[in-house]
Image (cartoon, rainbow, N blue to C red; front, side, top):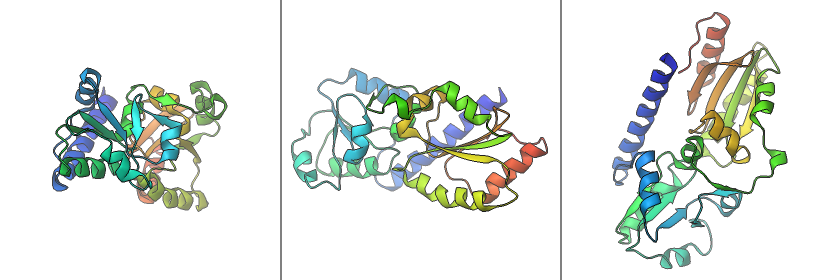
Length: 246
């Protein structure tokens, strides 16, 4: 019950942050994930736009989506082919590229533009379906993942993606921890794009997410960026029996 309350509080803080960021940038508040999914399901002739790179799109995407990458040579051509009076749903891995595309669409006169809250990471982690081309041999089963969490007494798992800007900022933190002689947890990085089924099963819906396991049991979890000090404090808390999921 305590972990559930903490999870709900974290999600409330994240959603509130997204709403404030969207408002500051001139975008209207986002729908909840449930409302977005319901509206998408009920929409007729919907335009679903994936604002990520072509490489990301090829690996996984929402069914019916088309790739509209701002860095692609045919970007304007793809925008011109869209219809302004059709309901338009936009997403990226989080809410960076999708927010920029949504603003541009509204500026061009698109009447109904909705942005996926929390991006594709939230969509996948919350159990919604995607089209994936990831080969089974490259993805972990839950049983294999559990074995990994028991490969050392303490295991720190980094759920992220090579395409995620916030995840890239975490890399120097993890590298610094690996270099510390007194840092005992084994660090394992999981590429979520290659492990969408696992992310869905574990309900990993924010990238990056760090999870600390002790003898295969989750003892600490943090969504978003974490500093060296925060991770060290969590590990020390586990060692002294004071850690909690947050």
